[in-house]
Image 1 (cartoon, helix red, strand yellow):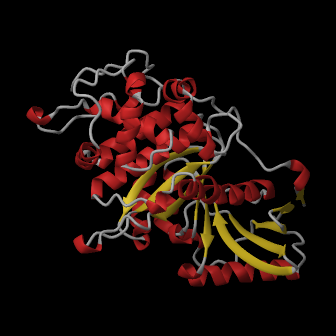
Image 2: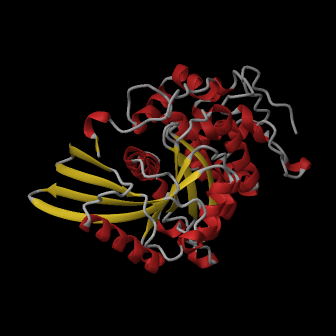
Image 3: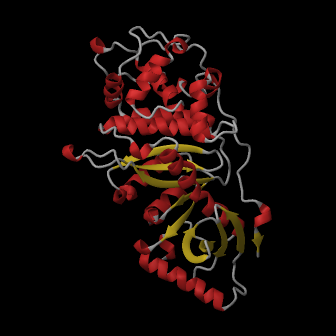
Length: 399
């Protein structure tokens, strides 16, 4: 590999320093631009609002004087075609491994942290003429650290069952609560989480029809007894905002006698139910969801884990769609689209952990305007949390 010209980077925790040792698999005779310098330009450009190869190349040219401070740029700024071609040649697994190494270097290991796993399809990343389906990524989100921990690509949502175990293998989840929607409610996945030192909370839907029916019946029977003598707690929350009022009741049950196949679920020790009443524009809707888990019957822990899982939708998927316009991306090369998704996750992590009081989109704008702020994002590690976040105690009643 060529010498990496960034001398001011602390290689242990800096954002770009972890990509310095990425192997360059290009033909030596065709390397006009230094790989690691191209990665630095791409990272900086994504932080500052670029959403594709054309914008990345234009940003590089506009900021040439700033990049000259720490990059050699022997042949200037690469063209957008060069960026697309080089990122299409990079092995996604190796590129993602560099991303995870950086995340591991800044992540605080917090006991009881909720690690939410969920999938997202990049809607316009398909190429029907080439038979290429839209990219579907399964990602893990650490709620208290506010970090995407890793991602694994799969061809379709139906393949999440095989992607989730591969993603779990890449993660440090000891002492964490792993939450997954109904697609991941599988005995093998539960066993893997326990084997890796974590606990699980898995949502139930029709794909586990018999188990779902038994859990529903268990709560009906317990409610008929008014939960007398049963290991159970209830937590209620009321939230107002965005024109709606929502009341949620989180109920746990540590009695598993009604489950015919509970022994197949490694570590299973609780059932959970969430009843949600939402009032908006004078209309009231009611929803009930069920869960199984290995987290015990403590009500606040259950409520915190359920709410934490929803954070991957609001904190990751929504931000990627709105602030990064991910669903509009038309990058179709198989490797390049996956590597670009990693760059977006990287920028999301850094901006989420920057305490500047701005929204995600405005942080990206400021980074493009303010080179001092961009220096901070690229070369200074983010501040780490010191404890696991929990729900506000004023909104919780346990019983």
